[in-house]
Every structure is written in C-alpha cells, then in structure tokens.
Amino acid sequence: MGNPHYRSTHAQRLAEKIEGPDNEDMEPRLQALETAMISTNEQFGGIRVRLDKVEERLDKVEKRLDRIEERLDRVEERLDKIEERLDKVEHRLQKVEEHLIRHSVLLEHTATRADILEALNTQTKWVIGAGFGLMTLGVAVSKLF
Image (cartoon, rainbow, N blue to C red; front, top):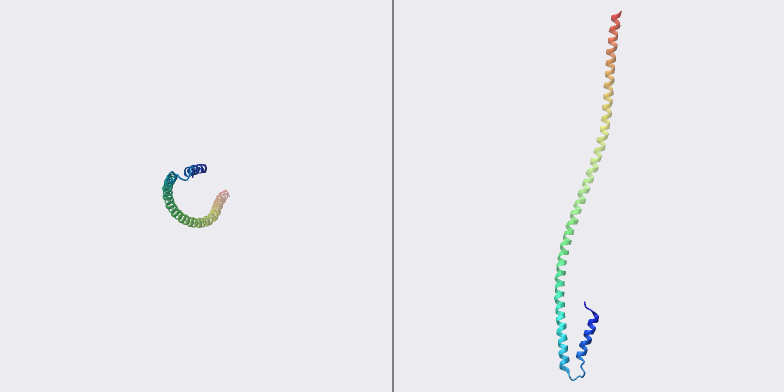
C-alpha cells in the first residue's frame, strides 16, 4: 500500500519537526502535529472512500455469484433430466436392436423358404415338361407302329 521507506523518512521528518532545538517552543510542534493529524485523517478518509468502493464491488460480486450459483443449479437440474432421457433412449435402442435381430432372423428364414419354394417350382416345371416330352414321344412312337 505504499513504500515503507517513504513512511520511515516521513516519520523522521515529523519527528524532526516535533523535536525542535529546545522544548520551550511548543506552539510550532503542536501545529506540526495538527498538520500531521490532518494529513493522516485525509489519508484515512481516502482509504475509507476506497474501502467503501471495494465493499460496493464486493456486494456486486456476491450478487453475481448468487445468480451464477442459481444458474448452475438450473443447469445441473437440466443435465439430470437429459441423463434420464438418455437412459430412456438407450433402453429404447436396446429394444429396437432386439427387434431388428429378430426381424433379420425371420427374413433369413423367409428367404430360405422362398428359395425352397422356388426350387420346388422349378422341379415341378421340369417334371411337367418331362412328362409332356415323354407323352409326345409316346404319341409319336405309337403313330409309327
């Protein structure tokens, strides 16, 4: 808050003013003391003004801190709600995955059934085609004899 060297030299100057060459001359010493007291009171007055300003700033900072803490509480509440929602979404995603797995198994089974039906249709066509071919061959052979 100040230079300590300045304080010590200032104190020495005040002491020199107070300790005059003889003790008979008290009036100048008292005036020097009064001047020093006035100067000190002015300095204390300046310090008080600064202290008041610091207290005002501190009050403002405390109010801001209270508002920040309130906002932080609201943010924490929102985060808790978001976490709950994320948990619900995770649960739903697990259910969807289970359904997708079931459907993919069913699709594979359905594809296998479709392949079997297609093969059966192809075999049926071959058998019918072979039957018609043999029938035609039988009719042709019977006309020859």
